[in-house]
Structure formats: C-alpha cells, structure tokens
Image (cartoon, rainbow, N blue to C red):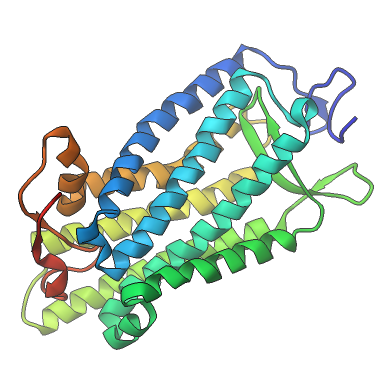
Length: 327
C-alpha cells in the first residue's frame, strides 16, 4: 500500500481518509468546463502568435513559448484533474501515473516561470537599453532561451528531495510536497515555494519598472500616453497581476494552515489557471493584431494587421507597427 492511502484505498488528507462523494463529480465537471472556456481562446492566441507576421519580432517568439506553456498548464491544471475527479482516480488507484502527472506539472511550470521572466526582461530592455535587448533576443537568438528555461526546470526538479505529489479527487486538490524519509509525513517543497515567490516578485517589479520608464520616456519626448500606449501598458500590468495571483496565491493556499476549507482545491486550481487562460482574453480583447489574426480563419479576417508587441508602442518602436497582411 502506498503512503497516505487508507485500508479502503481512499487518499488520506490531514490524517483522515477522504471518501469520494458527489462533490468530486461536480468539481471535476467544473474543471472540464473551465478548461474549455480557457483553452479554446488560448489555442486561438497560439495560432495568431505563430503567424509569420508576428514571429519576425523577438517578443512574439517568447510569447509563443509562453503560449505553448499556457496550454500545457491548462491541460494539467484543469483537464487531467477534471477527469481524475469525475472518475475518482488518485495515487491510491493509479499510483505511478499520478506521480508522473505531478512531476510533469512542475517541469512545465518551472520552464513557464523562467520564460515569463525572460519575456518581461525583454520588454523592459526595449525601453532601458535596446542594444542589449537586440544582442540577447534579436532574430534566432530568442529561440535559444528555451535552453536555459529547461536547464532551470530540470535542475529545480532534480534537486527536490523525495517528491511526493498527490491528487485528492473529492476535493479537487493537488499537493506538491516532499515526503519524509520514514514515509509518514508530508513536508514543504522548498523549490516550489522559492520558485513561485521569486517569480511573483520579479514579474511584478519588472513590469512596474517598464511602465514607469515608458511613461518617463514619453514625457521627455513631449508626448502624453495615447490610448494605444495606455492599452498596451495595461496588458502588461494585468498579465503581471494575474501571474502574481497564479504563483503566490497557489503557494499561500497550499501551505498555509487552511486545509479544512472545503473548496480549497477549486480555488487553488482557479488561481493556477487564471493566468494561463486570462492572458488569452487580454490578448484577444486588447491586442488588435492578435485578435484579427486569430479570427481570420472564421471569416473575420482583415487585409491589413497592425503588429504591436505586448508592451511596445509606436512612439517607442515604430518597427512593431508596420501593416502586415494576413494569410
């Protein structure tokens, strides 16, 4: 029998077996429905970002990587848990498969966090020192950033001492703990906590600096922020806020002593999925170039598309605002 399983094959949480009830089915159905309304828009965004008229710009190459990780995170934050809850599948039933999914989650999550920080650094350098941004990200060099991202992810995962990842179907709750040497206690995962708190701080600080520097530069040029510039800055700010909620919120709910809250699992998963699904809605509603490209296959295409990066306005970088043709 695996650790943290009762004699009846039920997962044990906080020292008590958690029998499966109809609550698990409702939670699973909620996850599956939420997956549809987040993954479909994200797939449209991925299609739009991957268009050749976007990928000529370094920021869109990084955004493509992030969008791929977004979809993978949605699959593992909502689709897999949805089926696990509906079908009542835990580590007590499928053992190694639960652990494999848990490990996959953290591999993708760590790579996503590193790439998100890289994208934020790229946007900041565009305003602080563009020659350095060009040196690090211009043309094919942007693609090379996948290597340090996965080096970081692999290192973080391989240095976790005795990882033990659980899913409680009736609570809809993932736990990314370490297990004690005697297999009797679950302890905090320091790599998970460090990654999420560091990512939250870096993303928040970088986008805040970017917004301040952009505003200062525009004022020095004798111009006020236009509607387009405000919208582009708001995109970066909102995605940064969602990222903080996703990373820091999940950690707080996972490790603070509030485990008896009966909807803890769904709230955790919502925080986790918010940034991966919410970013798609931000792009589709606030980035005209992405919206037009994403909707083109459905008969809503436009002959010309204005390509703009998530945080670069025409006043700062005119190269990102040349009209491009769709198709």
